[in-house]
Length: 232
Image (cartoon, rainbow, N blue to C red; front, side):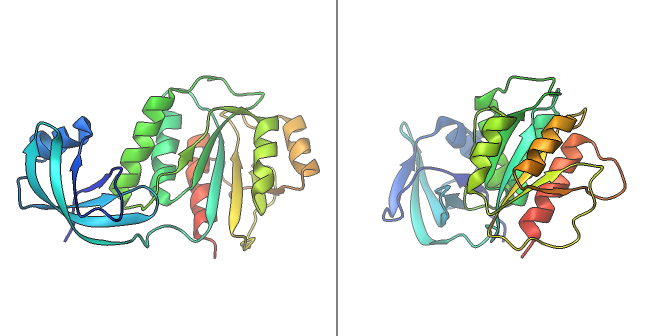
């Protein structure tokens, strides 16, 4: 049976509490029209989840009874950090949504030399990531960082066991790097600058393409992230 899932702030030691987030309460009551006695799934966004039953709607919010608490087992084994260049229009929002759905653990917007869009509406981005995480049944929410220069992103990526710099002219990486944490770098609409490719080589990044076809930047971000998440 499929339950409606929501990520809320709750303690695993609590058996009854009130959901005070008015947006979630409105969705429960007015959009989904769930009534007292109906069951929902709650996640704390940190890997734990709970089956709960709606008790009542009050002025404070939605009161629920927690019936069972367990660890969410849906998170990927490989921790993937997606370093994606900011894209124009709604394309970057698409990347945020799909990256959250497939199991990326961190999303780092990158400003490279050919990046056209330089700003990010972080509140909206957080909302997109949160809702995508709820919809896909994740136990945690990917961490969103503020936009970084490529130099800053390279420094941040030092924590990863392996970093893969995706570039169409590079050979296809046919084998899994078999690493517990992987950084995935995707360039902007116009591609990486040659000097940036050179810097990636100096940093000992693996350079790889995604095959013979040229993909749009937003498509490449999702395909590359999914491959990295799926490697075991």
